[in-house]
Amino acid sequence: MKTFEELGIGDSILKAITEMGYEQPMPVQEQVIPHLLYEDTDLVALAQTGTGKTAAFGLPVIQRIDIKNNQPQALILSPTRELCLQIASDLADYSKYIDGLRVLPVYGGSSIDSQIRMLRKGVHIVVATPGRLLDLIERKTVYLDNVSTVIMDEADEMLNMGFLDSINAILSKVPENRKTLLFSATMPAEIAKIARNYMHNPQEVVIGSRNEGAANVKHVYYLVHAKDKYLALKRIADFYPNIYGIIFCRTRRETQEIADQLIQDGYNADSLHGELSQQQRDAVMQKFRVRNIQLLVATDVAARGLDVNDLTHVINYGLPDDIETYTHRSGRTGRAGKSGISIAIVHVKEKGRLREIERKIGKQFEKGHVPTGTEICEKQLFNLVDRIEKVKVNEEEIASYLPSIFRKLEWLSEQDIIKRIVSLEFNRLLDYYKDSNELDVPDERGRKDGKRGRDDREGGKRDSGRDRTRAAEPGFARLFINVGKTDGFFPNNLIELVNNNVRGRVDIGRIDLMPSFSFFDVDEKSAHRVISGLKNCDFFGRRINVEIAGEKKSEGGRRRKPSPESRESYGHSKKRSYNHEKFSSDKSKKRASSKKK
Ligand code: AMP
Image (cartoon, rainbow, N blue to C red; front, side):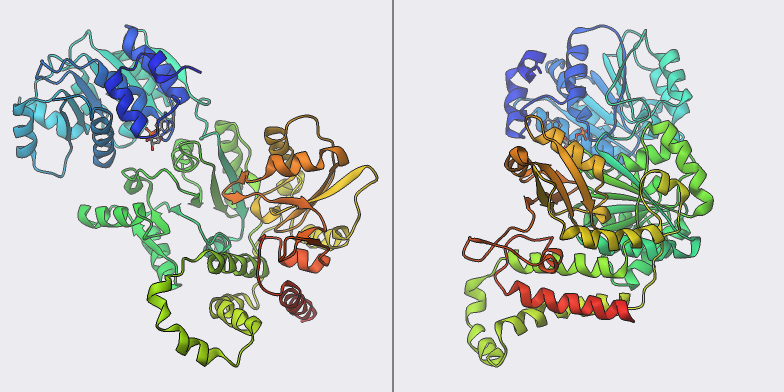
């Protein structure tokens, strides 16, 4: 892999991007930077957002600017004002150490007069939405004769938004001998046509594969009855307490309804759609960016302007009509090297569409199992315990209240206090899910994929209950791992984790998947290599923890053998400072009694 320097990036830009934490070029940068710097041909790059494409075109564009020439030399077209502002801001960061370089974003919805004033003062790079730029061209307030590079970013989005005519008009106004670069996440026929009409022998680079979603996105579908879609959505949100995602709906009305219901049901959600004013949309997007909102319910069009890199989930509340839209939706997670999950909550009639999407994106959907009430309560309980463990205590502020608090709680034991704190939040969920049913619709396809329908799964649970106590085969060691079926963890994921993270040959024996953790056998010689290789690995946002099954650190750091029940109850967490056995046996009693009902 080459360095930025080897790709031809000069010192001032290098200094700026090093400060921004860019150490190595990303693949799209390795391909595009030398092309823009040294080649004469045009380029079509198929790349998703989040792959580093802004720097891929931005760095060489900046480097080629002649500061002494005060006219626009590069034109960057983007579908939305938000992306336009984002690109302009990135370019300003990259050119921090280049004196006098001016980048101007021009977009609709803000004063055209001040944009004209800035243009008159002289700018080197114009970043524009097509409609506003065309307006400026028609008013003869922007001079494009010195433009030597045109970048079309998210070209497929520009077409989706109806900018084809504007793009054609703009391209006919820039000098013929310019260099043109087109970025698109997908390759519909209209893009190929633009390339044919306005580009000179364009070379094509593909980052990832054609029409494929981001490589590190896992696609999961949940099959439910149409009437249960909203309930399934809530369960998924409950099962991932740290979810940060967009829920895509098809219509404005559905978007508003789902958002209203979620808010009413106590979720940290809001809506984003075309019936809101620009000001309202800006406010919602800003709240979502800074994570004041955890779940954003949005239409495809309204969400276009939103550039957020670290979504954990994208939820398709029903499938979109066209596959490109699915690619865009799912490409909003799994960005910048992170992993993400694209969920489709579908009812039986939508199932056929899944196959079409799979064919197009070249990836298979996994069948997800809608978490049961018990699984959700368990997950939330441990999330709460984790938060209690990690919360920062403001010793100074709290000190003066502590004596009276301690006095008031004096009569309670340490364990009682813990139970009460946890119950404050836990009771609400227990109540809600008390009599809840399973929502999964059994699915032949899911069975074929190796995942089971409802009846099988319950059978599977009983089997695995026995397996938990099973010893490893001779010559093998049995390991515990803190992810299970409801995390979407299946044998192929385990094998992939081991292959990617553990050096040398490992023989994997029997694998037993539980809902929220699993056991697997490996040859004895490899056991410790596997434990250290998988330490701190990440499985779709969960930090992996692997231990020899049946071993667990006691408070003093020595090892003792927990009962299988306490392992089940504490599968999620490592260190605790209260009495495990007591708490877990209470819990298993509760389980036993709820089964009897
Ligand atoms: P983009 O696809 O341009 O939206 O970039 C996605 C994210 O990756 C942005 O947050 C960039 O700041 C970041 N990024 C781009 N290039 C690099 C790099 N070479 N090293 C680290 N981060 C990068």
